[in-house]
Figure 1 (cartoon, rainbow, N blue to C red):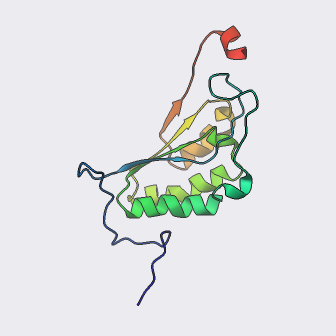
Figure 2: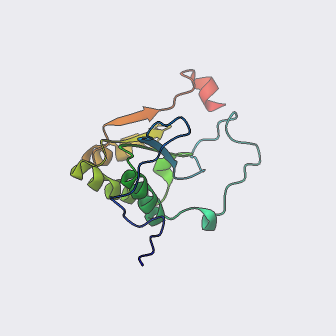
Figure 3: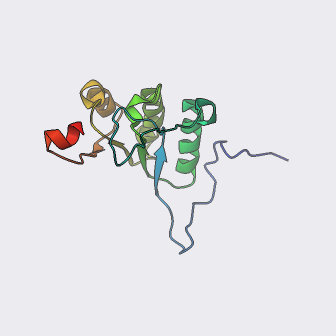
Length: 146
């Protein structure tokens, strides 16, 4: 008898189905609750974050995302907080890009506040990220500073 763990590669797994009978092919995965901005609507004055020991490691996130892909996910969005500040985040993107190369994943996307894009945009594109959602809540410089 073979024991299958939730994070073991299972290409024969049944697809995820929602309560309305629809196949789930799009999943958003939050990689951190931390951010490099302190927007008043998002962060409390005395913000508390999850202890690092309670977060999935980058390797665990990779296995989780691969499991979703095994279950029929073809579009994956990485989010946060601000995912680009998560230590090892680009290692996760590099790992997931193999699913783009194989054709099992059609789209790997990212939601960001944009503060780190100049630093990472070229590498993200190299790993196959073709769409990025940049959350901009105001174009007014005074509102942004507040």
